[in-house]
Length: 243
Image (cartoon, rainbow, N blue to C red; front, side):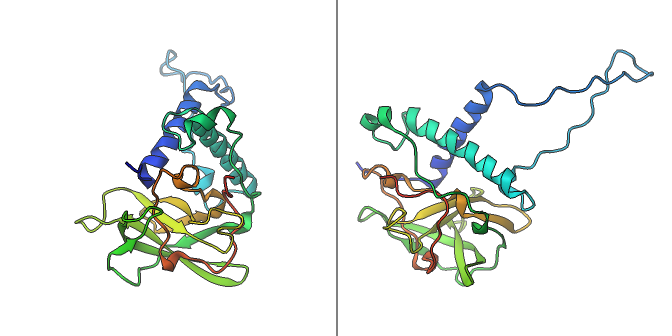
């Protein structure tokens, strides 16, 4: 039986390890200042309200340094998961000698803030996979447009097809292939994950581009980017070829 790469479970797998790392790690939160109690109730100290934190990875206004630091932490957690989890795509015999993944150097020029534009088609999109007879059906949820080195580009954000016609997941799937495929990056393409939001504005950061499971283990079957998501430019950001 061929294991099928599923976009949602993969990210949940990495997220669980990220959560575990936060739970077992020491807190880096600075000590809170001592605040005098209110006169009306001397037994209850006044705790200043904390501002809601915004993840630098999803913050369009975040500085490049903050984004790079957040990506670095995310990569360390992912490599920990790949080395130790029973669900890791790294073959079990290779995990003890697993030395980590390969990445391009962080480059802020490959980070874009995009408005999700309407799709040019509402028809189902049949996508082949790395294994034969394992086609998947998606639908376009929106189109992200951006410019790389003066070249206008666009990518469809997809959702798995269902009778709705979209599934009820909040995940948007952005598979893509660029001119580095088969040379510097995995030949079958790479993926980006986005979380659906109400604003319609998304941070498309190719520094977060990752390989599907089949890049590490040929027993997995992964969907291939559709022709609309094949870029005619080099995206030297994100994950590189594993071997």
